[in-house]
Image (cartoon, rainbow, N blue to C red; front, side, top):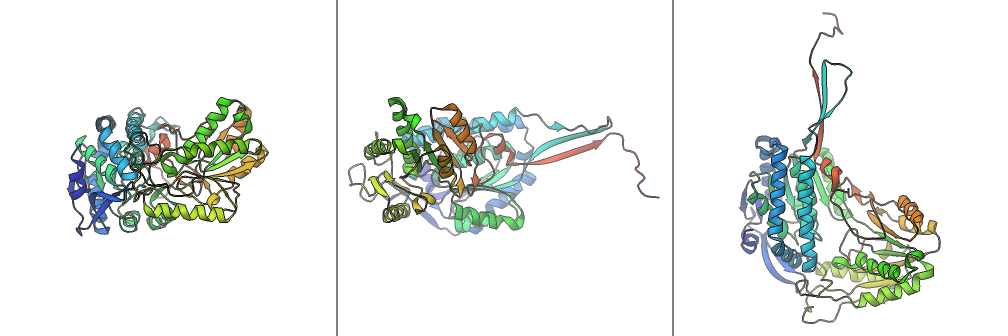
Length: 506
């Protein structure tokens, strides 16, 4: 891979096969959230840079070879990209850690998942039939339904899983034969910049892959409204997603939105009937809430536990939460890194203060940790926090906090558990823990969430589809439906023996 520091300083915008600075010459410092110190500089693009990138993608789609490249060749390129990701795994994992604040081990796992996504979509598109024949009821007619690329795709990705979320869009878009412009989050752009370099190294034609680093209110807004963009795919918060949809609406573009979540983790008492079951459920509740400091759209931020086991469960949960080792993600043994920014930490502190004022009981955390050698005072650290005795009227329960805060609610009956779990405007993910197989199927079937885990939390499968109900978004990523998002359907009807119809006199 190219020297990442040099790339970040001078050449983070890539359009038409060339790296360049922003038209305005503006730059942005990228801060390490562990110490709030800058460690990279990228170009700060604006609307003019977005226009240049879209124009390059438009030319590459209308005039270039990629949309017409045989499927086998497109799949082979995606597999080459996966190989390059494996080659650069350590470097990219470290870069993801410093950029987003997560641990290096989390960064490595992310790179593995990115490589898996490229392999999966390569295999999926390579194994497809060329078209679906439709019986027209006549030997003189050949009728077939085929899939074609959408065109120019605009991709706007979030800061919490920068490269993983980009790959969920880029891999299927390329597999389908599209060109694209990607705008990563302005605060975590570095690994997406690196991926564009890997695509070029793998042999992707110039202009197919374009990137503009810059803020959402300029670059993102322009991409969403641009008349030469055919599809907009956005992952992020509800407010920004609503603006993207509104900007795309006048052009009647295809829109895919993966938005927020307020995800329930429902624990029935029978799941805790054995020591092993209890230990597993507590351990997974910690993972659900505190992986990547809770900055996960599918985080199990709402623990909904049966009243009969609540005291024991929450006591043990809080004890273990206090033992989570906070620190710089690049330090061996650190289990949880900082929040991504000072603004994000301020938001978390406001939510916790509001919850305590509304009657929540603090069982662990609730403050900034003491500084240490692995936790610089300037870093954006916040202790894993457990709030007991919560109820549905609290802001911290209803709104997406996106931080290391776990709220606890309780229930007595299965119906009450389902009602609580579904009492949210979001519907992204949820989980149910029980030793009763029948109950597991019943509850999973009644939960109005796009992904439901049974006796587990957080696993993703590339071949499964990822979407949500309610205000968690529209469209699907991953799986065959993720590929379908980046395609149009065409019906080709061929009359092999045309004859006059004679509808009209003449």
